[in-house]
Amino acid sequence: MKKREKLEIIRQHYPGALTTIDAVNRLIDFVEMELDLEPSQVMSADSICSDDVNSIQYPARAKEFLGPFKMGGLNGFPFTGLTGMGAFASHAPDDGAMFIYYGPHIGISSEGELGSILRHGHSARTGCCGAARAALGGLERDEVISGQLQELDYQMNTLEQILLRQKDRILGAPNRIYEATEVIYEAIDDRILELVKATKVRCRYVILMGAILINGDVELGSFSQPRRFCVMDVASGEMKDYLQNPNE
Image (tube, rainbow, N blue to C red; front, top):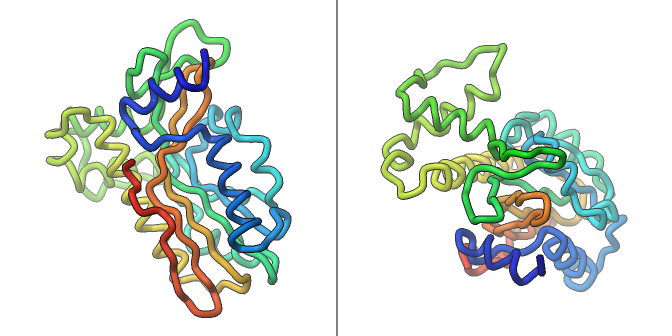
């Protein structure tokens, strides 16, 4: 399948999607040309789902950065919290930058179906993100109890609470797994911004890339739909937005 054909499938749902490889290439070009830094001066972190498919599809060129520091748990929520953000920030080179790629993931099959993919070695599709689908199922069955967070399944319960707060919006949406993923993205984005604001940073720049990470069937690969791309100049505190139309 050609790249053009793959993008046609993904862009039915995410019109601004790029292959993850192209997204990383553009990021490295930006770091070198706009910030005048080498990739080796950038400490990276990701707050993406711990699903193994994200490791399989991780672009090799991203390894030109330092790291990555792992911030995310189920469906990318930054469960390492303030302590994790503080540790990550302390690892960034003084004359460089810290870069965070974050967001939930969702599967898209070769037929354009949302919420499942064909994984390596499988003959049938499985859920992606499985945790988001399970949380959505609990919401649809009215099984999610407000405030219920159990130590044994804390991360899953947190996802359920995020969806519960937007129950009417999700259940009234044309595609519920798409909408649930958008809700989770917004919660992750809010938390990342909160953590950055509360963290002492010693490097020159903080680069934030928020996205919907899209996993395809084996032959499709992975894609990113940008939702945020901004850079904070640490010395001035100025945050510049480089993404004018995040949904295009």
